[in-house]
Image 1 (tube, rainbow, N blue to C red):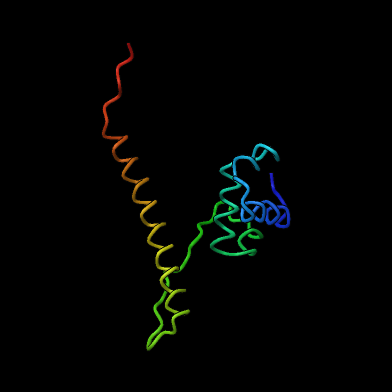
Image 2 (image 1 turned 135 degrees about the horizontal axis):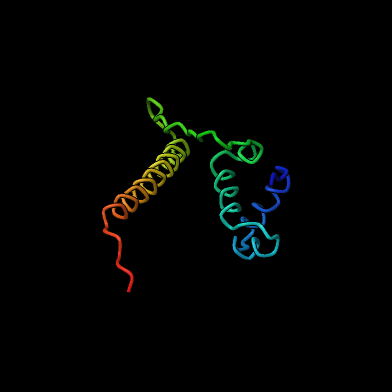
Length: 112
């Protein structure tokens, strides 16, 4: 089912105001994974992330580019936050890949 960006923003704002994703999901009868996806898109792309329909497309976020020269504290903080977010996404991906590899290597368990 396709939801309007305004509705998605309303849900995300409730999360930003402290409501739990699972309680909102139960109330509006939407999968909590879908709500988390909207929240993550909003955090990375802002409102435009909620407007885009990316089914079948890969979300590609460019790696943060460190500006040349001296940085102000605000610029450095922004760069470090973007770099940290990128590294967290890479770590999550590697953890999932590692789990899949381990799962495939395990022999099937015998049923009793």
